[in-house]
Length: 396
Ligand code: SOE
Image (cartoon, rainbow, N blue to C red; front, side, top):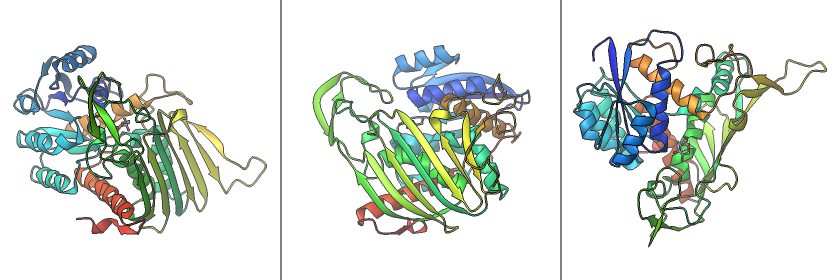
């Protein structure tokens, strides 16, 4: 790496790949100077049409048709891996071997065995930065709630309740894609539940065990698309039906090491809820709630307020809160932001990490990604055993 320059590439030009590509481009303009020169070098995808559309749209210099071409590119230093979960291990290990810094999308891998190999490869290359793309922790509102937890102002955490409800799988005529492949726990639990599990630990600390899990699959087969299916999109369908191998809905409880409890539900069949993430955090002295549909604010209840103004109050996100000052062009209180901004803050944090600046919270490590998978595995195991309590540490 030339210390005065970082070359960036994104492998995968689907929905999330485009978000990473846009994030790196915007990361060069948010916050003050300090980053070295960032060159948007390449977008790689086996589908050259997708790669070219994304490269042109977000200003990347060229396209590649394979991850190997990115690994071999001397002008690439930082790579986002945004392909199907089943490909994460092969691609990430190849990039690390080629000396690239790697930000891998969540979940880290489809299996704990794969994730352990990725953790080992990262540990064997301590000069390279690696991380997992849990973007919701970049929400200024959630980061602000986390600050109050960490300062002890809320007191002992008692209960985290979270939901992440999508409806991308509601349509039985939705095409088969990688999201519907893999064993129990690789569906809604891995795809969207992994975000919620990350937020539960982000706010509540380590989760020790899972119990009462139920995995449900309502649409059991889907038609293979004629062409490529991108993200959650529709596609022309063939007449070949394939079995859905994982869950549409998951609910479970979890026990934090602190003694607190989490109640979690993740669904990809929550009709009408395209991307509804919300949580409530109840503690000894206070409580906080967040709704992604109103991402520019959070609500807060403080037991110390006993006069006639007692009650939940709406806190508009603003310059006092993380990521806002310098991150948004307009940074006054109540400024709105969306999910795409979270990819900007994530990209900025990773670029700063690689550049040795470290002014933003680091991206979660591969070890954290492995831990996240162990909790998902414990949830799937709890479901297999009729809701029995399963220790996270007990996962292989
Ligand atoms: C956030 O972008 C997210 O949860 C993705 O991580 C999932 O893969 C997608 O299915 C829904 O949106």
